[in-house]
Length: 226
Image 1 (tube, rainbow, N blue to C red):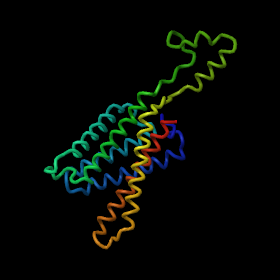
Image 2 (image 1 turned 90 degrees about the horizontal axis):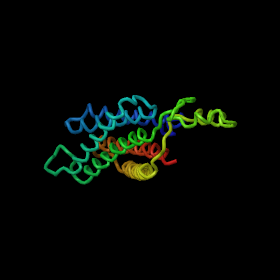
Image 3 (image 1 turned 90 degrees about the vertical axis):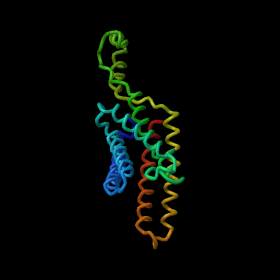
């Protein structure tokens, strides 16, 4: 389990941010006029929900299904990012394609996080278990070894051996993304909303939630580099 999961002071705020983002995307999916927008927002809502569930180590039996879903979502956004301009329902223009490319990265990063947690989590050894799978069992009766063995088995538990390189790269990537979205948010706040006020408000909301989401991902990956 990622260390931040065991810190209530961070776990609760991150859960709130993820659920807020998921709820917003769900509302946008319901309001969307085009099928593509509905699918995109629904995938984002699912991603935020899965990240929130990860914070509390919920539904571990569905890990493979979660990874498959997120990997498929990453592929879907990649296809949109590289689609030709003739496909009007998909990402259009440089800003739209960059947005889809970033969302593809977000989905892939979420799948990577779940994969790293699953791959590097070791089961808790049972104290006192004898046999070839527990080489310390035979040393438990030696002078001074019983206490050490007890301390080892007591401290042992679901631990994560962090994979520093991908976690560090993703931490830096999402930190840069959070800074970028924050800059865009501040720029939009300075602009006049006299014309197309509703569009400006929606854009600001999108940038604010993207900033919070990127910050959350950066924090979660940062805990895996420690």
